[in-house]
Structures are given as C-alpha cells and as structure tokens.
Amino acid sequence: MAEVSVFTHIRERLAMILNTSAYTVELFDGHTGYVPPSTDNAIRCDRAYSLSDGISSTTHGIRVTADGRPIASVVLLAGGGASGIHDNSAFVRADALFVAVGPFVVRLAIPSLDLLWSVETDEATCFGIHPIPESTDFISHGELSIARVTDDGCIIWSGSGADIFTGELTVLSHEVRVADFEGRCYTFALITGVSKLLPLE
Image (cartoon, rainbow, N blue to C red; front, side, top):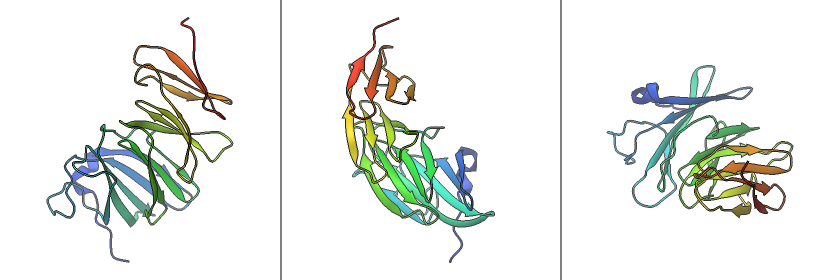
C-alpha cells in the first residue's frame, strides 16, 4: 500500500484520539473551503467524502495509523451549520468509527475508512453523538432535533422542542435528558421517543 500523506499543516488542530486494540484513530478540525482535488488545501489525504452539495461549512480530517504507520486518511465535508470536534463528536465500536459532521452522522470502516453510510440527523447541525448503554443504537444531539439512530444508519425516532437544544444531553437508562437555549429541560423516552417538558425547579 502506498504511504498515506499526513496532515502536516494542521497538526496543531489535532482534536481527538480514539484507540482500538490494533489502530489509532486521529480526528482533526480542518478549514472550511476544502476543494478536492486542489493541491492548495491545508488537509492532504487519500480521499474526500462530500456529504452536501455546494460550499462546505465543516471539514474534519481523519487518519488511521498502526504502530505509528499510516494506514488510511480521509476528509469529511458537510454543509449546514458548522460543527467542531469534541468529546462527543465521535466514538469507536468494534471495527467502525461513528462521526458527527455538520448535520450528518457517518459510519466509517476501520482501518480502511471506507464510507459505509451517512444520514442527516438534524436540519441544522449535529452537536454530538452518544452511545446508548447495552444497545448498538446511539442518540444524535442535534440543534433542532434529538434522534435515536441504529448502527445501520436508520432513524428510529426524532423529536424537537420549543427552542434549539444548546444544553447538555444525558443518556439515562430509560430516557434522554436535554436542555434548550432557554434552559427548559426535556426528556425523550428511549424506546418510543415520546417527549415531556419537565417543570422548572
């Protein structure tokens, strides 16, 4: 396999590292305006996956290595509301990497980083993704919607509130709790997605 180019221009933007038993997965916050296949891009990689038509507002770089040896690298491009990389932006499960990018969630194979699927979980931005304990599903914390998604990329349920969900999201044993911009707290039943507005304390 040919040597994979490195993200030399954005090493200072290394935002997250995830490890499997055999591989290290690095996620980078990149610049907007990535234009494949231009040689002037700040991010250099094997492949670029454009999830939206038109101008990209979010650019995430991903690289897989084994014992320091590069295996694969990709750039994810998405329109909609811009998203950054933080603790809830991605997780690894078995041989798959799940990543929130713009309004989408994608599943990539490890170590090849082949795109297995992408799904738009919010009309604006996906703030983060949260695995559900004792389930292969996960919760998408969107700006406008909270959704339960299967590991095959199917949305089981999706619900909204009176304002954008900028508050912290917590996955409990039977429900999801999240606060909106005005500080109102909502619960969503894990099984049905039925929502309830909690009374103010």
